[in-house]
Image 1 (cartoon, helix red, strand yellow):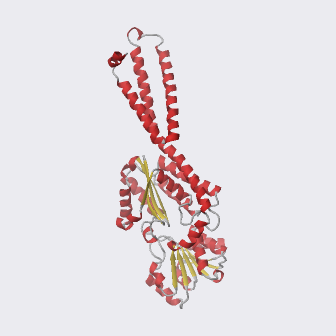
Image 2 (spheres, one colour):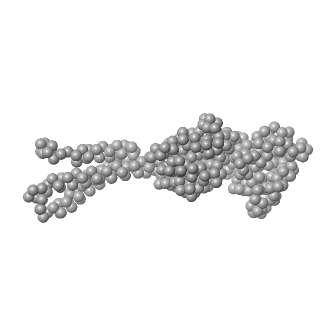
Image 3 (cartoon, rainbow, N blue to C red):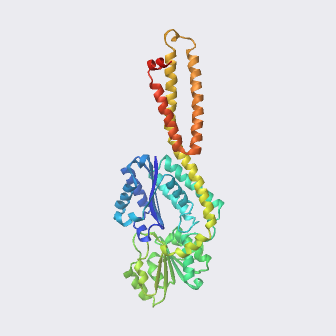
Length: 435
């Protein structure tokens, strides 16, 4: 049995690579169904966020879904040449894969350490996998372990205190680059969870003139009313950007909302006034070359490094404590994961012990003893003895597993099974010559 994670994230791949492999909810469901059709005996969960794309797989040698084939699957699904993203991929197996997921779910591997959004994204990925029926005993247990680990990290450390989200860091960057944010007109593009967080953080730093523009106007109005700001229709986006000082974009789209050529028209109407754009969407909302236009300063999610590093330094102690919790839970999961493979071996050991007792009983009750009245009583007694001996052996196997790991325990049980098989295979005549 093996657990594999194949992926790339903000540490290994730039945003222009990550956005090519990003999945929305519908794409995630299609991909999971396609994987299950290709390799039906393995388990899968697909996690896709603005900062990572990760494919989790579990099965007996992953049932043919090895890392190379999983990488080829991503390439074919997104129609992206494998060579474009292969150098940015990482592969973790078994304990390393478990440690990685628990670290991710606890936000300790996030661009912004302590962000609360990631656990919701992990849960949503797991929900989609359950709906697609691509999970099983191993990944079910693993992801629930990740949820419990995240909860413990958040409740027993201060890792999530303060402004800890990509949205918060985007607002912090805007605040650092714009002298007086309270007098600035800010356009927020997208009213999803990230857009809502952007509005919250803007209000907390003193922004007052905030306009929310969302593809679904009703959703935009709902969020705007909640925070006492203004909502505008999607068709008004260009007009709103014409008069804005700051734009923060987090709309969920597959193609650019604005290309360089299209945005030139907006710049021309702005009469040389400066516009700061912070684009934290993946895939991005603004074509990168817009940054070259006069008076326009465009920052992507990968440009938040300085603010992110400051956040990380202030949380070093909490990160260390969080990793202690992660490692404890990794050890607990791996103990279960290793022990689950001992079950069939222990079953074989029980069968062999029972077989030996049955052979010995058959050898004893022959001739004049064949019809002995004590046969049933003696059989029951022998079965009790065998079960007690088995209990002692299994207790020792459990002890070996705790102290030396499941692999060593499996070797011990396998040795006992092979010895028992050899004993039960010895012909009676050969035994008699040594008696």
